[in-house]
Length: 87
Image (cartoon, rainbow, N blue to C red; front, top):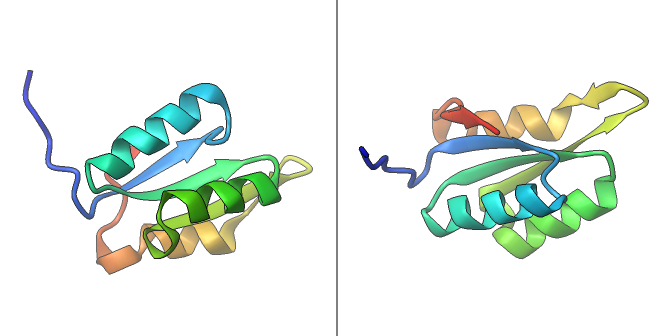
């Protein structure tokens, strides 16, 4: 299997505070990826972002079925790298 370089690439993770989302986020950060974390609870996702790397991780959340885009938009433009993947 081909290995990908993830250092400084932005990956969006939906449901990031759940079990699979947490494990995926940790694994991607260990490979150097920058993360855009999305979940329903802003406090949980912000706490997760701080634990995973502060300025290299941005948090967003869904509210009443609508996405709050400002933190997410910031994450996608970290280093003008665009978005490598969506989980």
